[in-house]
Image 1 (spheres, rainbow, N blue to C red):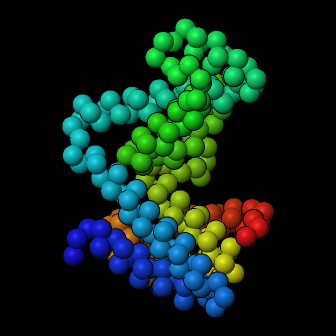
Image 2 (cartoon, rainbow, N blue to C red; image 1 turned 90 degrees about the vertical axis):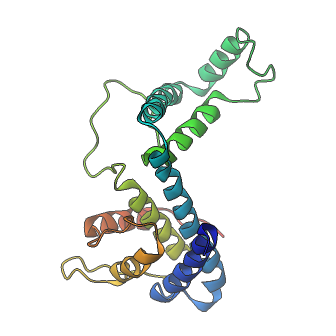
Length: 220
């Protein structure tokens, strides 16, 4: 079976499995299956992007890390500027840049964010960048690392899909049981190798689910 066919088959099987474990109501099942299949398939594609590191030389990987670090700093600096000052600055500098489109059709923020997202797919880091403000603090407690970010992203997106479609996944942390654990354990063979550890972090599941529960409902 080719790689693409395997990804498609795993996405279909995983979505069907989740539909049952999360007890999705009948009237929402079709929508849920589409969204869950897309989530699993995209998780595979992101994993493949991170696997590019196997085929990139150390020199090229260092260059990518340097590019990502520089672009993140630039994007953070742009976010810290008031909108009107950013627009003025971009207009002022574009007049002195012969290679920049004269109609300003490319916005600095969008261009830099696209570069951050592209680099993050390879490095495995979160593509989110905070505005620059004062001294740079260390990594906040319980924030994601490049090792935990892919799993946390998957759990958060899955929790949102389940919530939006009227399903429910449980977690009883003290007893180390619940349908969250059942779902991840059964999904593990259908997801990229290593994404779901042998003993998934219950605190990661709990805090991520709490974040999703606190989000406002979005209209369909």
